Length: 57
Image (cartoon, rainbow, N blue to C red):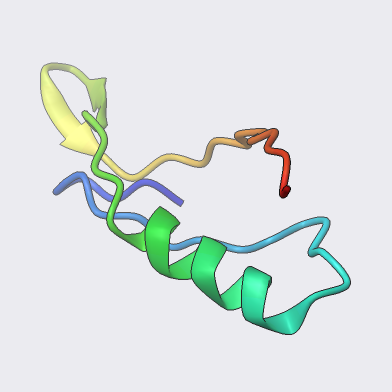
């Protein structure tokens, strides 16, 4: 969920099998900021699915 102020509520749809990695991912994603969707020129809440691909070495 992307709020009108650009902050986000994050949910992992496909969490990894590593709980610590999931926690790190959520902490990082909570720091992301977005430009909110606009309706009639005013910011509104919206929902967006975002895929993040990464490799762990």
